Length: 425
Image (cartoon, rainbow, N blue to C red; front, side, top):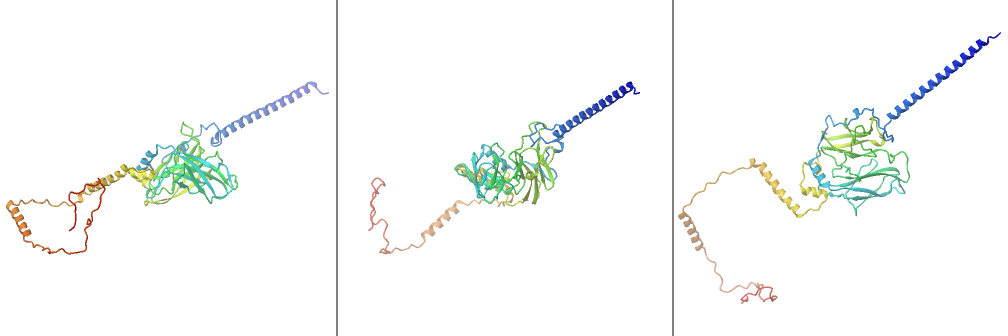
């Protein structure tokens, strides 16, 4: 006979075990949810805030290893040359604006040869046959060598584009100083994409993605100090408050590296003559390469001390600055050139005064008065004793006619007539 009390006890135990299993499963599920939540949160914080449009910036990530630093080793950051500062001061009154007229961004062009048309305002363009290129506009397609433009027509710049090749291309244009530095004013640069014959995806950065244009070193930089400059498109502003850094630009010259966190040029000294490699790398806030296909570029620089540009000098006179900027020379400025020549001559004499041979002072000898009179009398006797040339009795006919043989009528009142009329006998 089955005991009913025992059956009830077994049923209660089974229910209690089931409840315990359900509770354990619930606790495991809850722990799993909490773990996944924390993992997702940490993963979201570890992702770079830019360029992935995440609003919150990581506060726990240390940027001590990515803090901007100065060039070290053999490299030293120095002030710009004196002539560069002079020219920059003269150009500070200009506020350049450059805009695209044609083709439109994202256009698909039907021909491989096309023309770029830009509008330029408030910026001089010039090039001197002796002093070199002055203020200009730079146009660069992809990583091809830059084209420097020094001519415009009615505020428009026409740049023929040939042999670019089919496919997608990125084009940048910016206003430039004579030494190649890009003007960083708002509106002084632009970038866009264009497609020749057909668009090819994945070969160019998107319009909102960051990409780098190396401005300098270029073919303009031969001597020392060396200009380091670049443009980073679609880069957010930073340095406005602590912890807002989202990118770094790492520059490596022959193995010596330094980090930059602002789009400002620097001048480097300590590079010997010869060939040198300069590498530009755009990094995110964690120090990882940022889209390296477009933002890791290597430049070969050949440094020499021959044919140095005029803007590497310590100082320029107003005449050369005006010529380099394409300004009209006034008469007063031309006179300054003569004054500077005189100043240079005086300076040369002052520098070489120790080399000038001074002669011995001349001793003055007093001559008695009677000796002076005797000397004049002797001269008079010499003149009186000179033989006279006898004139012929009759004039010799040489066939020559006096120019005023016939009187010439003169306008009345123009010239006062002489009192006696000339005539030939």
